[in-house]
Each structure stands twice: as structure tokens, then as C-alpha cells.
Length: 193
Length: 204
Image 1 (cartoon, chains in turn brown, purple):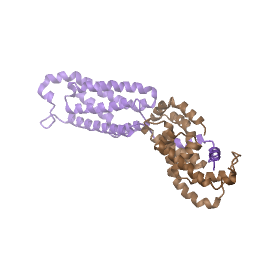
Image 2 (cartoon, chains in turn green, cyan):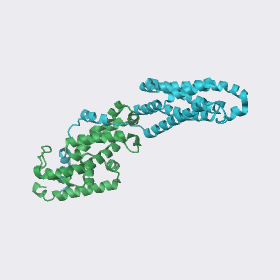
Image 3 (cartoon, chains in turn brown, purple):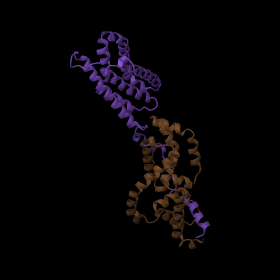
Image 4 (tube, chains in turn orange, purple):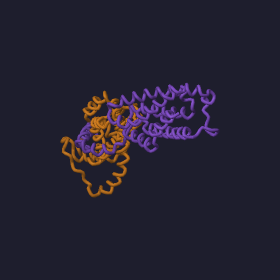
């Protein structure tokens, strides 16, 4: 996970209340500034959750349209980034139910995922199995795992975004990892672990 | 599977699981910008207030106009002060009538200038300052003999509400709110009625 994104969003937090006030007053330039500050991270999260550039773009757009439409309801109890990521996760979760139903019909046609070349030390078969196993996790576990292990959110941040207790977040992560291990167990010995 | 091996797999996944592409920021923004609705705190409440206040002004204005156009007789609504105080009181009311007439004219002028003034940010403060002054005048007139007439008192109360809303537009205003104000004023001839009310005072 890149901590750069956090650093970028922190730098904007200094003027964020002012920026929000300007957006609420109808300032389109401020709206663009706010968008520029947060869109990369929102898009990144949407992409990780969907694995599809078109869907990530669509869900990022939906997130910001919703966010700008509801900005007057943002009370500042949490960071704006947390609020935006909460909307993102909601938008993705709702939309992906439809997408998954559609994809399930296509799965048989493209049964093999292309092997990715990054991380040369990992067995491509094991990697592919892991990716499929992540895809197959229950939504709550998958979102938690992606946010924590892949995108580097803290448990506190995830708990804020998902609206659950930190303990729940930790429990879900533990469960997710256990399920992945179980799925990979039969392959691991063959990979020489 | 060992912990080390699993951790290695997860570290690999951070690079290989749905690795995000560069976000097409401009492309996404071009789709977002036209879909952004006006956002402003309590927008709906302000609109309702403004429309309600405008309707009240219109109603009272019509009532006042019809009263002033009616010949004074047994059926007309009595104005307590003038009935009890007689001719001398009418004479004493003249300065207030003049002030009220001037005030109504200035309020009408402000409401006419509202749309143009709000278009440029520089004019906002001038307009709001003027609205503030007129608000003060409104409240002074409400406590003066000029407001002894029940319908005039109601008119002043309603104008007070409108001016308060104009003052509040200083920090929160949008094109939509202004359009609604203008629409309400145009549809119901608020400005001509204010002028007529001022003219009535002048004629009396």
C-alpha cells in the first residue's frame, strides 16, 4: 500500500473546511479542487474492489456525484476522506451485486485468469488461486482484507468507513485470512512452502 | 502453509491483485460536473421560507392596496389610532408616512437590484449592507406609529422576513435561490405592489 496517498490527503486537510464551505456556496473551482484531492484514492479503492477500470471509473463518478449532492450533510465528525470512502464502498457494494450476477454467467467462458508478471518469486498458480479466493470471500471479509492488507488502511479507518467496531474489523480480517489459508492449503505444499 | 509464505503471498497481492490503473481524472470530472446538483446547507428550508415570505408580502400588499382603494365608510376596517386620535394624529403621522414611503421605495429598489447584484461577488456586500440597513428601518417602523395600521404592520413583518433572508444570502447563495426569489416576485408583482403601497401613502 502506498502511504503517499495518505500524505497527499493530509496536505489538503488544512484547507479542507474552507474548501467544503466554498463548494457549498456553489464554487465549482473548489469542487474540482476537492475532487482532485480525493479522486485518486477513491478510484484506487474502487479499482481494487472491482478489478475493472470501467467500473472503477463509473463508481468513482457515482461516489462524487453523491458526495457533492450530500455535502451539506457532512458534519465533519470523521475525515472527509473517510466519508468519501464510505460512500465509495456503499456504491461499489450495491452495484457489484448486479455485476456479480452478470459475471457469473460469463465465468465459464473465460475460466483462466491471465497470469500477472509482477512479484516474480510467487508461483503464478498460487497467486491466481489466491486472487480467486479473495474474489470469493464474503463481501464484508473481502472489503476488509482489501482495505487492510492490500490498500493499507488502518483498522480505525476501516472501522470508520464500514461503520463497525474496530474489534469487528479485526475479527473479519482474521476470518478472511483463515479462509484464504484454507483455500490455499492444498497448493502450498506443492509450491514448496 | 507457513505464516511467512502467506505473508509473502499477501505482499504480492498488494501489487498484483486488481492493480489500479492511472485514474482518468479529467474524463471522470467531465462526467461528474454536469451531474452536480446545487449543494448548500438548508437550501430547501431557505427556499420555502423565501417563497412563504414572498407570498405573505403579496397577500398583505394586496390587502393593503384594496383597503386603501376602498372609500372610508362604515364597512372599512377601522384603524384604532386614527379613529381615536382624530385629525391631529393624522398630522403627527405625516413624518412616519414619509419615512414609510421612502422605506417602501428603497425596499422595492433593493429587491429589483437583487438579481444583478448577486451575479457579481463584489456587489454582494453592498447589497447585504443595504438590506441590513433596511432591516433596521423595518424594525424601527414596526415600533413606530407607522405600524399602527394593522395591515401595514403585517406588511412590515413580512418584509422583515424577506430582508432577513436576503441578509442570510451573504454567506449562502446560489443561482437557484435567486431564480426562485425572482420568479416569485415576478409572478406576483411584488415590486409593483410595493411601489403602489408607497404611492398610496403618498396620496394619503
